[in-house]
Length: 457
Image 1: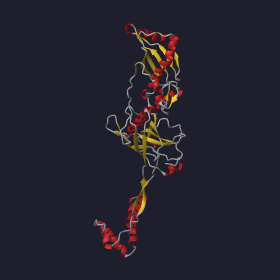
Image 2: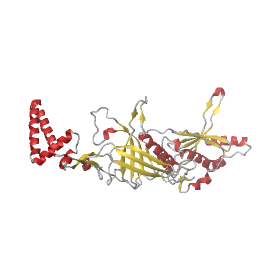
Image 3: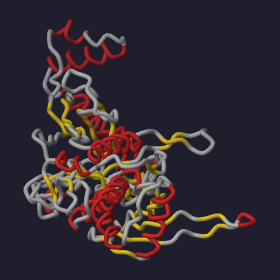
Image 4: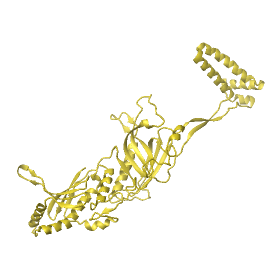
């Protein structure tokens, strides 16, 4: 948005106020007049409040003339230019500054939270009266100076005459590439604070079976959408694991394996005929090895095969009181995908922070949700996230782990975290407890740990 129009009736004189949310400048116009045949004459620019909070006339005599005309219609005395100047630069400017501040402090008058925070910090630092600095929570007084207690300004906000603010409709929240939301406002990223960022990305499917996932997982990461920056809280940990399982192979299974390997190797080199000869020769050779232990081995081998034929595996034990040595060993089965749990306590301190927390929650929920195709015949993969731990220098944290692209698999919000239901006047919750579960989309490999920064993955 650019200019927001509001209307102030100052001592009977209607004035249209145009406040620019990009610059903080406010302009005061007389209301347009209607002529014959429905024509309209634009209003006259009376005065301007600049981006530093200073005021100046654009049409000094026209402003006083319009004011005095309204004074006459109300039976009140007219003012000299000197008296009008005193009236405008004391009572008048106080009201117009309050109107401008009401527009600039309203987060709904910006395209997003990040723009609102950026512009309002600039307005506050430039000395525009009445503006609340979202990073400190301090409110500028009538001289443009920040004060810790906003109530100190209440005496300046006189009721005056009636005025109207243009109604603003709530804007839908969706993916906004490049949008950066953060909590708490004013604490990160430039105040020596370590934090963690969550950036949502579109999921990129392989397209065909030949495009397999590589070890990095980055080929599944599409265009960046919103980025959310949150403080580094206790409980940051990682857990790496791989899967091992017990495996056994008795002497007969080992012999069968050797026969199969030799036969297949011969088939690859000499063809089917030679492979059949090799199969027979290797089978006889392995059987001779098994029977080489004498009568005890022979009886056991016969009992084993008899049990297999009769579908009675326990026959060997019944006949001999023995079992084949399973040669059990723990063998590697495969890698595991890591899971990361995050828990954040949101306690909004003022309106901008409350709105930011609401948008943060909605953005996480929207990006983890299943998407529908246009025809609703198919369901699409939710968006994925990249997660980074950031040191106060703005770079990846030099002593913490790295995380590969993740899916947000679980998201929980507690709206009554302190066992009581409490809201601010506008309905904003006084607190939210949010827990999230992320799972990496690809496993970790040893060669990646060698060259990765920090403590590796």
